[in-house]
Amino acid sequence: MNGEFMKAEDLKISPFDHGFLYGVGFFETFRTYAGDVFLFEEHMTRLRAALTEYRITMPYDDEKILVAVRTLDEKSGDADGYFRLNVSAGVHDIGLAPSSYTTPNVILFRKVLVPTVRGVEKKAVWLDTQRNRPESKVRHKSHNFLNNVRGRLELPSLKEVEGLFVTAEGFVAEGITSNVFWMKDGELYTPAIETGVLPGTTRAYLIRLAQSIGIDVNEGFYGKVDVENADELFASNAVQELVPLSGIGEISFPGASGVYYKKLHGLYVKAIERMKEGGH
Image (cartoon, rainbow, N blue to C red; front, side, top):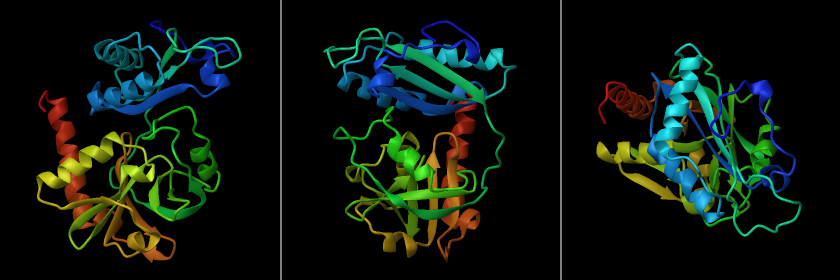
């Protein structure tokens, strides 16, 4: 926290932090692979864009953040970890007085990375909670997470089920903690950023991967029927990579046996292996 290593139980922030009072804060979540973070630069670019828009100073450069990530892994027995890099606005009086936030609280949380097996399937359901509109032109990964929390409350477990949001206009948006993709007739589909979805780092990389092997990618405004008529369905985020979805409601999909899921996830894993070996 703010450049100092400490135990979780010793972490403290003031109730006057505007991240608490008004939700003025942003974060990134990612995991390490042998001490490195896949797409780290993309995560930091997204975070810094949000901080700039809301006039929050970031006192640390990317290399210092990455050193802190690696040090936390080392202090935890050289194991890979799950990380949340959180920047909140900092302490100010009650009221919206500041015109800029120059003394933020920067916390890099690390927790144990739950062992997972690639290719484990999840079911999908349509959420009753509608996806809200972002406060900005593009959705930021901010402390304002109530819409996600409201969707999460509909599910017994996020481990086995992914809830998919639909906008008030009826357009498919994203998962509670993921972006969503589907294949139809050999083409890849995903909701457009203009629907209000988070511009995921893994989402953008998957689009580039698909295009690199000649798969046509479609970003647009789609209804539930488009997803339900798909050939394959999967979700993505930085910690879980690509998650095959075996069905939505009563409709079944190939899940982990999907040809395109296996192809795209295989390429994604190869890219991670190249990073671990020092390549690009």
